[in-house]
Image (cartoon, rainbow, N blue to C red; front, side):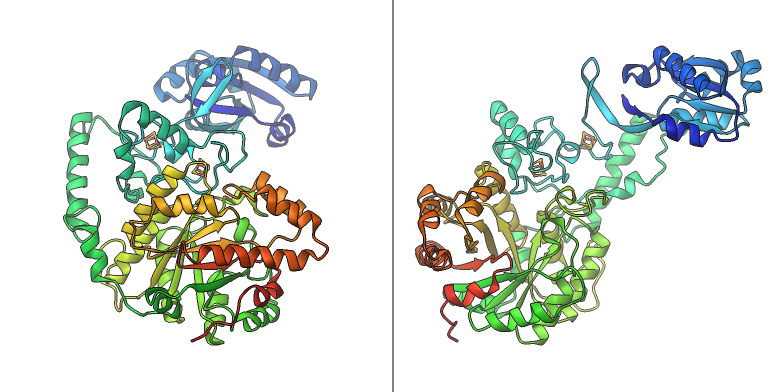
Length: 546
Ligand code: SF4
Ligand code: SF4
């Protein structure tokens, strides 16, 4: 059913300015169940409008105004009252309001906001379950919809943000991927999780949607869909829909020695990198100086893209400026704010601007940042974007059109070894590697035992792994991260050291050095996420030798 909410009275009265006589229409179906447009609500609104000086000339509780023919008949029965009205207010979903607007000559105002297509969990308790995406995939996800129930619509596995099984967004609802895993485990079908879910075909859901069974019955539609899918397999014969094995495709586009990061990792060196956050504005002198200050201590600099969903200078611009200064950038590209058209353009732009290391991420949800009201895009997830990068490196765009010059990238991704959904993290990491990721940056590591356990589970993978380190500023910061940042566990022993330290900077440097040393036998390098404390980097790392 369509779930609705009541518009504020002030908004309704504003819409009715200049109209004295009003006719009200409710809906005995969805809106009545949602307690927004049934008998009671019509009665209550009649009283409120009357108190506000309006004359309610009549009301109609429709059996469902979204049904045009039925609404026409129902309106005929009240045509005298309707004809007296200056305007109508409809307490139904947007479809119902529009049906009425097509049937009368007066202005028709919506009385409700339509929210989502939902299930009735209990009387008065509704939850969104389907976004009508047009390509139902829940046969592979245990009958649970990740398109709708994951805040980022991730279809190839979870982000690294769940905590105690709860979603990073809001924290008051379960991570749907934990539910999918549980359901598939119960059914003995966890193998379904390994399947690559391709990018959705939004051409099939161009607005407005129309199904006309006078022209084509449901069976004929289904046959036509089968032909569309066949045609798509043909169209993507070079791609994941076609016959070609992914590994062959990857081998075709595996550039060697493309960047210093790649050369050093492939040469078996233990590499040092660090992260620099672009400014919130155009004052770039400081960050360029930070880059120069640390360039002898790292082989490459990660340049974040709107970290924590806080709007900043984009990663590509700063990556390009670093490249011009001889500082090797690792360009971050997120799927949060661009669709596949924009992502491909940006990747081509990155290549011509001299950027070769590309780190593909989903990105923190926009509700965590400073533009909470922004529209989330998530046209692709990180696995799909990696796959798309690989296609582009093979000389094709998403639709298989030839590129006039193919880019070469050294592709990387992220993983959270401390995730509460570690099995799913590793499943997704394997998909990312199959899609083209050659190296992984991890969430911050403080407990080497947890990291060792993770490394043990992925030792068969032919990828490079760089462990993340966030220098601790205080015991309070460590406790904050333990509580609030998914996958971070700072052991009590380290917190105690920070608490007792006379010189906290010196203690923090010692801890970072110990973790870095501890990682030498476990992985391929470390990367420092200094959270603005750039001056600490030369104190943790020795200068990099050529
Ligand atoms: S995958 Fe989800 S959004 Fe798409 S049709 Fe199925 S239930 Fe609806
Ligand atoms: S934690 Fe991440 S993967 Fe899980 S539901 Fe939330 S956004 Fe989706």
